Image 1 (cartoon, helix red, strand yellow):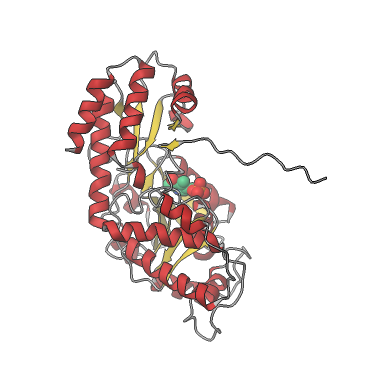
Image 2 (image 1 turned 180 degrees about the vertical axis):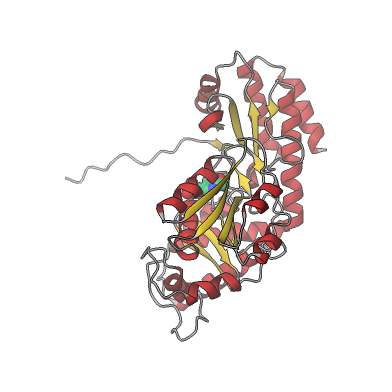
Length: 391
Ligand SMILES: *Cc1c(COP(=O)(O)O)cnc(C)c1O
């Protein structure tokens, strides 16, 4: 039989949810370049370049800065299996879905988890995190940008408190990287991971990852092998880093997702071309303009002033609005995706991505118009507010 199967048809979508975010043409073109071998020196050069671009984007000089194969959660797992040993005490901030996920991940890996719970929709008070640390604490984990609530966790003073107790500071910056100011070295973060499909505007599939020299030293001092074969950072480094002591360059561990590396490199190029300061400022502006516009429709931001994550705007859905129905019509009739609330916020909020290419007036105008129409609001006024915010 040689019957041709129907061609793949993907609907036209504007991705303004919690991720994935819109992927620019340039990134898609990079992804479609011919696949070459993972041990080809030409690919080695692309890897070096990608690591350098990642260092620049994460504002770090860490040699151990690479992309783990897998989505953001693969970065989380790499962090835990390499930097937390079973039986170690870890303080874990939990004020949303991703803090919960980390607490789960840590528990499954045998850590003794000291949770510092916070309200979903608020940052955790720094003092509470610091007070939970003691001489036995191996690490403190926090989510910098909590995508389930649109809250940004301040890291002020956490690194100093960790260092005093010889603990590592571990951070999830999946949704904040390249959208909200985060400077890994200046903040004293020891290990951080991100994802490609949030503010970097890549398809999902890689987890940018960085670890400080102090953390890597500890890792190499461990005698027991990593519990995960796939996420064993020592083995991954022997491929990604050419300078690991005693190792020949680029030892095969698993096949790198070649084309995703092309895409990430290109996406990081877009960040470089724009400039980090400019990019952070654009996300703030986009967030504030959209917040003003949506307020005219009765949609108020969940996060209080001073705690908002620019790359994700979570708004309360007013009483009497069938949030699921509006979201569904927005997707099917307008081709625009936004996200529902999760956990205790299910049915109560919409989560709107303000990520990279989505943090722009054009896509936001479409969203505001669509929502105004579906909610029976004044589209003209909402759009005028949006445009005023961008002027
Ligand atoms: C999306 C996200 C993750 C998980 O990433 P996946 O790519 O879905 O595995 C982890 N943490 C935060 C804050 C996220 O937004």
